[in-house]
Length: 184
Image (tube, rainbow, N blue to C red; front, side, top):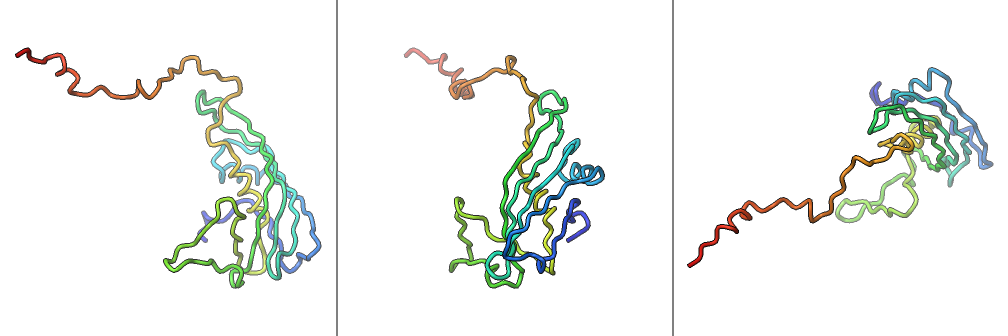
């Protein structure tokens, strides 16, 4: 991982300290970390970030994260460029396996393609070493919930003109020739 790929908000947890009995940890960002998250997410400001994460063992050597993340972000309205605040509350779940685990192997068919069920559970993520970064995982789920096209509340579109498919068709360049028919 290059320096730019490193997560800016981290909370590493030693996998050896995670037991079969679920343990809940609460993490939140301080002012410096909020600025780092704003940079990482490409928003004007992050006013708050907090996550409650339940950690437990999954199968024999995996770890399951299950929790809820809450964040408050400010970004420009896509119409007026005025600041718009969005409050995010998102449940998430992720499973992590050591990269050398037999359960982490991706199953492919004879053509080398992997089948993914879009309605099924996500595939487990892998980790190397003896820690997983719970903070980076929570921040990733919060980032995925950010509205990419925020709009100021109460904004109406009275000036917008709607057209149907029939108005969207361009006139044929031969339509002008239609009126020039010869009478024989």
